[in-house]
Image (cartoon, rainbow, N blue to C red; front, side, top):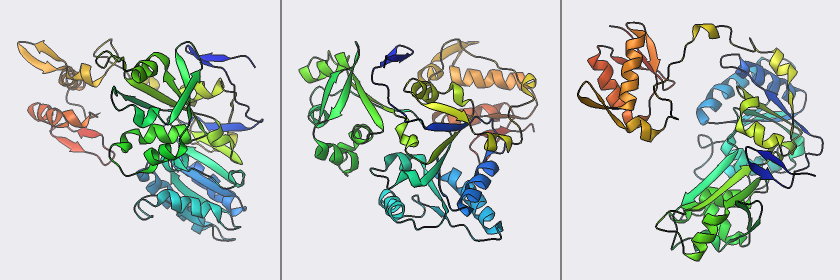
Length: 373
């Protein structure tokens, strides 16, 4: 099969998906996907199916789990078991082993099981995945990255891997010392922990791991030119992470525009809208886009470095971030507005709005609401 490319990255070995599709729900915010997905999952379980719901955070699980329990209790024919396995329900350090134990002996009955995405993707072994349906809330991160300057200590990981030609600029990484990689992946040594995420990806058959050829060759040869060539490894999540299940549904806004969609499409994944869930949403696109306008402070891509850069405004030096918030406040005048900033500028933003007589009130979701005095 011919190689395919995504923005210059060449995939030589296209993975066979064996005809399995990944269903998608490209729902906008507030469309009611929680209610739709929970109803679907509990109703599936009531028919004897086993369903995993994987979510990005424990906070998300809190909301969905409560709704699932309520839905399960409302069924008249028979109760549907609803479980959650995360750090709030499992002993410290036992989340993965607890999940694996349950999946090995889940019983014959239908059920709904809540996990975090991280836990699902970390499972070293999944017993009979073809017996489970999975619903993924929000689009998973399709990659993991490792970038460190290691002129003297690279052997901590390079001694446990090999690499072979893949493209002009990249090599494909494989494990040669599984025991050492497992120590890096699961050990409690603080130095080993620096390599934990990438070691897990190298050991995981659902990831392909690559390195920039020049960087890894220079690192191993001791020719890094004072940090110019750090060791750069990156893992790409494969469709097999979800096509192994009886069915897989990924829910997230603008899924077709996501990096995961583009990466998996060239690997042979087939995507299909999940009509039942989509039809259960309150709406499929926002109707008031014409009421929203966007204003840009800079033409360059925004970054923490750019936000912290000082500029001179009327003889006073302020950061681009504070300049942006000041301009935003001028635009909205005395109307209520929301703002969200990084933690490192939270105090400065609060001080700015206090000076503008707009005392902030913090919402539970983490955004910050300013109401006029």
